[in-house]
Length: 438
Figure 1: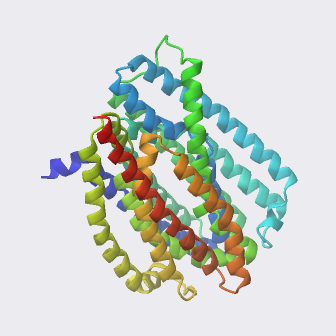
Figure 2 (figure 1 turned 30 degrees about the vertical axis):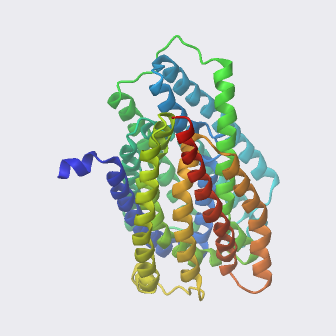
Figure 3 (figure 1 turned 90 degrees about the vertical axis):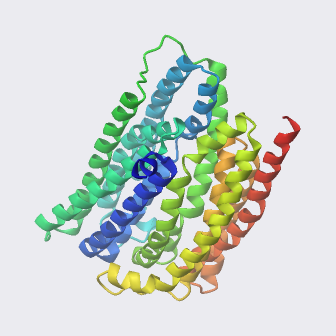
């Protein structure tokens, strides 16, 4: 029984993500206590930038999860080696470009004024962003192993690496705070940044070597990746990049909107509630991440029954998810009260609105994984682009109406309704067409 569970990549991915989530919640608690509301809000802004940097890969890493199952099906193993080798090379060039771009921008843009940071000098704020961008860029390349694990239908190891990383960071943060409780705020932020960036790099490096050893794969090949093949990958990758950037603007821009409209301190209550409801999101996304390549495999093989069965199972499971998230909404105030040491003011309806958005996002994300997996992206891109164009002005519209930090959640909720109507319909339409080709 235990072996069956350990061999199931969907179940183990969810378990590992749950471990990551619990470790993350404890980390948030100790960092919030250690840094205080203002400096924790600044750290959140910096860490959000990390999420944005990881998505600026022109979709190359996402393409791995879609293309490699196809190449394995076609038994083009030398091309796979050449393709992975090219991915590392191109990602390295992108990382250098990103770092130099952020470095130059930090010299000409007043980050302190943009984000209403009045408790640190402009020089320190710029240095903090540059330091983290450096670590994020090297991890951008080292992070490729996660897509490779998913592409080879070994998704649980991708989530295992995240769990190891999060647990390790929690231990290191705890030890550092224990031994250096009285240093000033600037030293705290720099130390936390170095610990986070360096340890994450070491974990990524370990799991990269582990992947190549596990799969007995090496990058030694005389085959050069053809220009036409690369053009096709970059074309597909560009679509993934549009999706990733739009997705980031939809869900990671909220902290910046709140900081800009109010102040960094206002980010803290929103961050606490959003992180709490990210727990079911994290577990589910981890559990279904291996489906990306499985969907691609089943679609290539025109296995209509397997695809429809996956949709049916999820729809039934979503009822259970609704019940669990509803219970989560009810007990959230109690969880927050014991999770966060000092009392934090949670705006009225923020928990309810965030819970509803979480449910809509779970439902839409499952079906969007199918579209991503088979590379049918045009409809999905159109929905995302429209959502991004509306999201920020709509958020500020609700801010002007006096909805406070709830504004960013209300705007997301309205747009997510569009997602849950259109995306599943598109998925079923594509699967049902498979019968015409059988």
